[in-house]
Image (tube, rainbow, N blue to C red; front, side, top):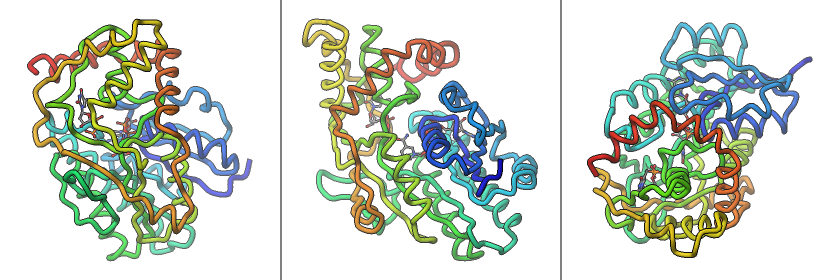
Length: 353
Ligand code: NAD
Ligand code: TYD
């Protein structure tokens, strides 16, 4: 089959990456999608088992920090575009092991940018490096206000500092070499296939197994939650219509204090599991706060809505119900993920709190 373009998607076996791969594979059967993923603890090919036989899908196990391997992939596939999601993505792990974040998020991004510069050789027509980033680069908000695309960067965790560095590298390649780039900075995602080290899937898993629900500090921190498929849809729109050299904020207009979100999950799960109302809330345990814990994230996504017509599609309660249903129906996926290495991480992260 003739394909109209070949897109390399890094980190396609992870949470958001697998949703982006699935979305593009189905919507554009005439695009060849090459999923480039090292399969770290966070990468899981089971995330794509419903689409991995499609004729426009290819998987390549590769580390983005391995410059020779990345060069070979560029030679082999002649990518028209890269959508870059591969990253170390969990703040708590970045506190345990910051250099792993510098390696993948900074060095790995540099290696990909350089491969684009080399293989596209200044011929940038119809080429694009799309960098998927986070709202955490903007730092921490007080009780009011929103992050806009003009908010100065002020990262405060090793994770957000490494993502901020990668954003700067991307813009440096745009200004210095005219590399066609676009960046999006998104708020917290939730949905299916989310690794249970992050708040929502961890709480769902622990409620299910009647384990303590660890809430950092007083649970007053605020996050702006977005349905992961709405993020994938935003990436599709920005990929096709975004202006080169621009940044776009993506957010859910959906702020929740952690403690209120955990209580909502308890009530949804009590009703789905046929437990008496209020039972799971008794599992809530306030634990030692995260070091440097950002108080509040809130995104102003009006540029994306105004210029490219994107809006979140799903109400939070509906999205959470769908998410809980997915975890309840995919026990095997969860069991697979939470065996072995995960237990080691969990004990190290939560034992002393
Ligand atoms: P994830 O941790 O679920 O997945 C990361 C993927 O990258 C995994 O498949 C992993 O195997 C792969 N990977 C890691 N290191 C690699 C390397 N050196 N080489 C090749 N592959 C490697 O992450 P996610 O939550 O899906 O996030 C994806 C991207 O979106 C990240 O860049 C993250 O910063 C960004 N982001 C995430 C959120 C969120 O709420 N999760 C919000 C905004 C932005
Ligand atoms: P997380 O899902 O790790 O995303 P991020 O830190 O990137 O926003 O955490 C979301 C919020 O939940 C954050 O304020 C930290 C808090 N949190 C807990 O209270 N308990 C937990 O066990 C985890 C993992 C997070």
